[in-house]
Amino acid sequence: MEELQDANAQLYEAIRSHAVVDQAMGVVLAIGQLTPEQGWAVLKDVSQQTNIKLRHVPELVIEWARTGALCTDIRSELERQVA
Image (cartoon, rainbow, N blue to C red):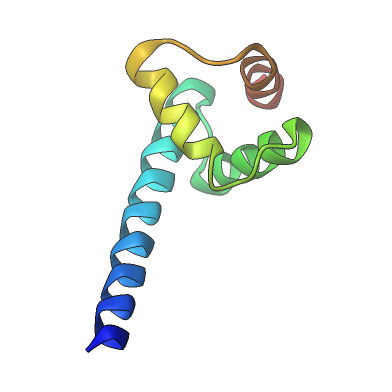
């Protein structure tokens, strides 16, 4: 039973993570007028250039879209990537 609960938790996290990435890509696509492939590349590049794990970058982008708050290094790199 515990294995089933673990598998269920992993599946839930995978679905949630996918939704977060999709939402962040939507933000990036809209601000940069990019294709989905370009948007994904931007998220990966921002992660690499700022040394922030890729799984955290989409969360930060969504928070920025919601609140307008984004740390300077990510904001600068995001602007550079979509320019």
